[in-house]
Length: 422
Image (cartoon, rainbow, N blue to C red; front, side, top):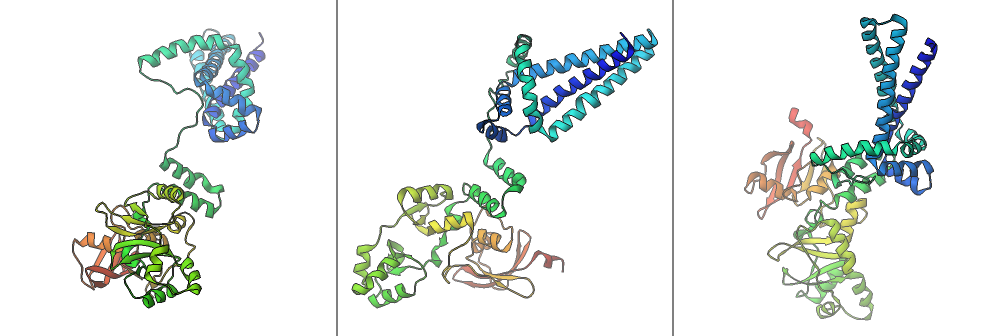
């Protein structure tokens, strides 16, 4: 055979080997979620690729069979070319072996695989049209080879997963996917998705309105006091209690009550007749679960109770929705929602501020694993009630106690981290 024919045959073998390398990498790197969407849309290449990936051992068998046969044939052909030109020269044969190894690595392995990793979808969908008939043609050989493969896997106690089932993502993996690959998602939608995923790790304790900030009505107060409070309240639903906040008796809709004012005077007895029974939520309930419970029980407001049955605060449906889409309601002056910014860049906040709110609104990174409020975090830090004027640093943020009252830190000034270096 003429020398030029041998060289053309060698190039042809290297190209075919490169095709199998392209196919292998693209099949393994293709986005399985995107593949499922294309297959559902009726894309023939996607359907063929899905069928091939359903039996990974057979797919890899036919790819590696073709790849290795072609590489071996290329090496043999180089030996023939060297013998034709130089005769039986050991040095020439060694140099020829090095050259064909280099050619296989560059043109049949590395370059095709880099290209396939860059464009896995386009290459995999096209190569599926070639690999499908090849698999049918060489199936007996692939089956025979896989007998030995299966035997080795059994000896190693390895059970390969069947099918092309998409890898099940954990919650953290899904969050990472949204964070790193969600560049095509709108910024607002991106934020909503992350907040929604966080509902499993956030509990009602993190978003509840603390008991000391709740606006409620004492049904043992006079009728005039009750009426005045109803006319000036900032919420559509108010808890009712008898004597002390420990004795919660129910909850009323202020809109419903005010609509009935025109037909008669509002009295404590009248409020008790139209109130709803209090709905209690165990402390530590995940927000996503509580959202479902609100839906199932047709409730919008719940009292969070600890292990001793004492209620700690109030959670509303709006609190949970705000965790997903951000704030949209108007808060009562009793609730923490404003922060006094100072000229030096520091911020004065109430000690009862929720740590999640501080992190979100002020861009801080205060720890959320333990206490839920700034007051609790400071008390845990000191293991004592600090006096006004005491300075401290938590999570790298310098703070100063402005006011303490009734064993509670009332006001705190938080300084920017940059002040540490001043």
